[in-house]
Image (cartoon, rainbow, N blue to C red; front, side, top):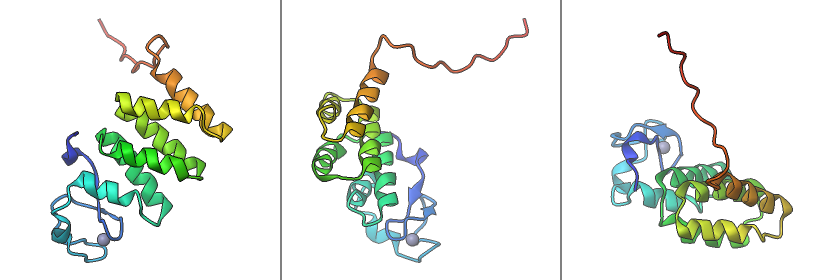
Length: 145
Ligand SMILES: [Zn+2]
C-alpha cells in the first residue's frame, strides 16, 4: 500500500476535501473519529458503493493511486454489472495503475466486453503497457554548458 499521507483526504460523509488531522469535518461537522477504525483504503472501498457517481469515480481513481490489491475483486464484480462507460473507463485506468497479474487479467476480460467503447479502452491500456512502445519522456531542461 502506498503512502496515504501524500493523498488528499475526503470527509466520508459529505465528501468535501479535509485535512488528514481533522477530528471533525469543517464542512458538515461529522465526527471523523468514528471513522478511525476504518483505514483510508477501507473507506475508499466502501465509497465504491456511494450513491453519487462522482464520489464512486473519485474512490476508483484513488484506489488506483494506492495500487490497492483489495480493490481488485470489487472492481471485477463492479465490471460485471456496471453500465456507465465513464465508470468502466475509470476502473480500467485504475487497473492499469495497479499493474498486478490479477489487474491485467481483469483488463484482458474487458477486451471481450460487450461495449465496443470498453473494448477500445481496454486495448488502449494494453498498448500503453506494452514495453516495446515508445513512452513519453519528461522534457529535459536545456543545459547551459
Ligand atoms: Zn463532511
